[in-house]
Length: 300
Figure 1 (tube, helix red, strand yellow):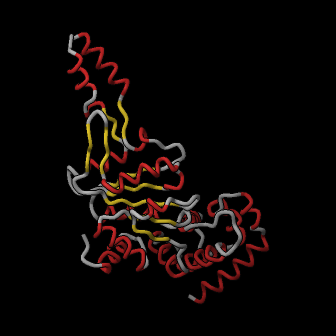
Figure 2 (cartoon, rainbow, N blue to C red):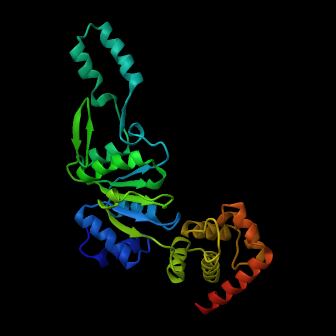
Figure 3 (spheres, helix red, strand yellow):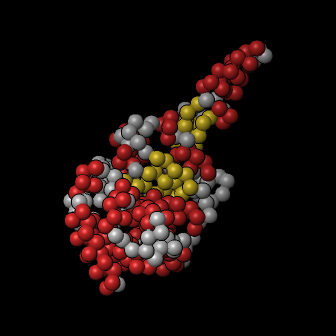
């Protein structure tokens, strides 16, 4: 796929994903060894985006499994189209079909509803292995996490009526977690691991300039400095890179060339998502942060 870590890092950069060396090495090893890559970090730091960029780089499908509380096999792996089976059974009964033939017909691929994990296992039969994104695993129950242990070990799924379906080539698996709960060590041992932290100033500025080429240079530096300063506060939810980019897009839409007290107050809801955090940003606090951001922007 890629001949070196440097080549992969360059490819990621060309697709507007700025990855530090450590993260690039983790991705490269995951591709070379076939092991799943488990990414942890706060929401909005770019974990999900890695899977999207990889699918583009490798010209393969992205299959996304969004996790949530109560996620079960019927949603994640497969289920039978019961309504379709009942209707077809009545038609077969009217045709006088025998029981064995009916059972074979009903429990066939025709009535199998394939969910993301089964799709990822079967996709390798038709071309390049897909990128399987198991997103926000920490939101799922421990029962689903336990099910993944077998899947990530053998890359096969057993369906009682059809038998075992095994991937010819394992999919490229990316798992993410916002660390709202700890993931079990048994699952982590099956993966390569990397923690994605908030970017430093120069990296975040580079991301803003890449993702929002229409932003005024001075505004881009002020935005980055202001967000970096905001992350040092005791907020319930610190803004991630996603919020930085959303705020940049909002300010560009408002035809702003630099930050002002009024503009920040008007657009706080783009950056902060909790009222307690918004209330911390009174006019005096914002103005102090603006003054620091403008000084920092001038130094760059």
